[in-house]
Length: 246
Ligand SMILES: [Zn+2]
Image (tube, rainbow, N blue to C red; front, side, top):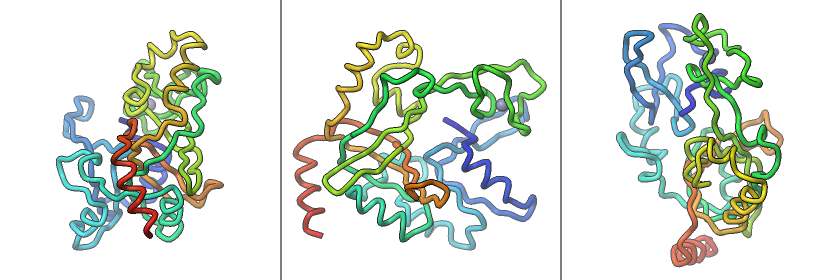
């Protein structure tokens, strides 16, 4: 879980202490021995609402998220790629969905530095080449730097309606999708990496995505893969015929 991606950091910088109220769906609550208290950690699955008003429950219902469930249990809306993009254009809020699509671009055999990134193990900030953490707010700034390596891939998702470019596939979802750990991956031969890539590439997958509209990026949409597995052909047929009727 990555507690501090850039998006979250930027959001946090806009908050006013003792004034902003945060409503967070799907946060991890753990005891932090450094702070001596319970802390909430957010990751790519979390939905953060600033000053949600008096009815946060509506927000939860809108996203179909219930407490104590992983998004895979509660995400039920199926979209084509074009519908995902359309919804992102019409609606500035993040949303979740399922798409039965193909991974049409997966650069596993490019340089390892494009596939695996190093992060500070305390605050999860991206760190260039095993240097020290550059996050001013890192809780471990006075301590010995410790790094964690993780997958950080960009993949394209395609179906008959279009392509959603540069979706994030990160640890720990990447490990599940690829079926190997970062350590195992780094010791694979180029040949094995290419084989791994073709096992997934151009296979119809059932993909759970979080879609975040973003004016800052060229495509206007940032997709993050929450889960990905080979799709059941019967299930695909059922959903595709339903989608084609609209
Ligand atoms: Zn750090």
